[in-house]
Amino acid sequence: MRNLFNSRDKLGHTLGLGAALVVGMLAFGGTAQAANPFELNFWLSGPRYDGNVAPCERALSTISDQFHEKEATFWNSPLVITGYNRIHETAFRPWQSDNIPRRYCSGDAMLSDGKVRKVHYSIIEDGGFAGLSQGVEWCVSGLDRNWAYNPSCKAARP
Image (cartoon, helix red, strand yellow):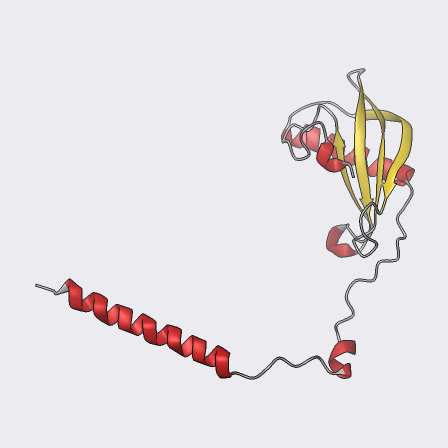
């Protein structure tokens, strides 16, 4: 029969040695060095946000297309957006200036069922596919069926 007490002692001894080795490497290892000028300027450019975000009206066709696709594909609904009214900007770069530039907009969307619903959306600089174009995130109040921006599209506003 196997002696479990001796096996545990060996395991604890091995873990203790491993922990001591890690602490020793951290205590006696080299110090961190700052990047030299060549390292700072070679392939470390990072994003350069200029704040060039399209006006609110430019995103409406994208929202209409994506809304129709979402309703038809995922919810088996014939709803489409037939028009917009009272589109206005609600905020531009509402947070610190070094965040990704966004323009927040709101307005009314007329739907094919005859109802008028609020639409809230943001246009994001370099937020499109692979950061190559501007992206749009949107929410139509009352039709956020997967609750991505719940409650009442609050997460789609600034």
